Length: 159
Image (tube, rainbow, N blue to C red):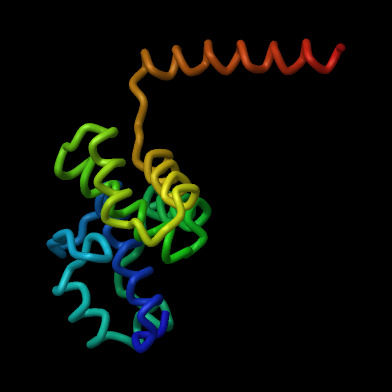
């Protein structure tokens, strides 16, 4: 991550924000700005410890869960600045500000009207996939639904 590149700074801000929502402890307060959640305190550290960020140097040791969260996040968003901006903005509105999903979606569409609807839906869906933790009842309902889809797929292959 290069501190002089806007896209890299945006990526870093959104990754840290989403990791914070996932439960990794950071002492950075985030507030919603034009390009999504932003922390001036994190920006200060990012600039003042640019070499450490560039080399991924830290004295902290990540737990296995934290490593899993990072792997999952980078796999879902692939460090795509637009997807991260959209996903983090939706997450702030839905998970932190407790806006109902439909309302959060509408706000993101208004705020991010310079992005295509397809990209907005992708970013929101990836944020939901990353942050949504289903209850046991929801897992059972999802499993039942997936089984129906699998059965339908198998039956369609026979014809």
